[in-house]
Length: 166
Figure (cartoon, one colour):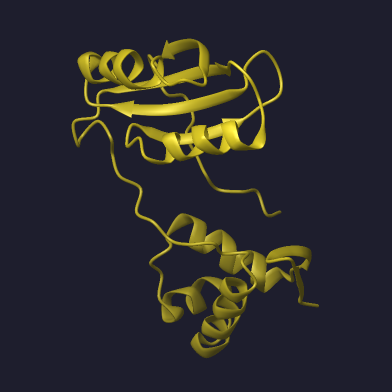
């Protein structure tokens, strides 16, 4: 039974059958798969795969497609995890900080978190000078930033984005 309920622009109630889960799992491995290629993996006709894929996209379950690039091969030799505490809180201040993060190309991901930091950032920088420049010239001078703590990633043990749909 396939049931996608959308409220306020968000999927709120999802029931996926085994074919939907198989399509999603295959697309997590290769988002560029054609309906014909999906049909071979999922054992449905290409037209059924295309219809189901379109329904999953329309429901917002598939939110987009992207190629995974090798940051090292492209010259981004530094990955850092940065914890940020703000001076004060409020919707306007946090909105301004979110816009700042959105405009910073070094920031790959940003999370509002519980714990000892307000935000955790995942940065990709070309080198240590690029990283230091972002921290000292852009992040620390930001009027909302009170404290920054950072760690340079030495080795990546796991970096996956696929969800377990079993």
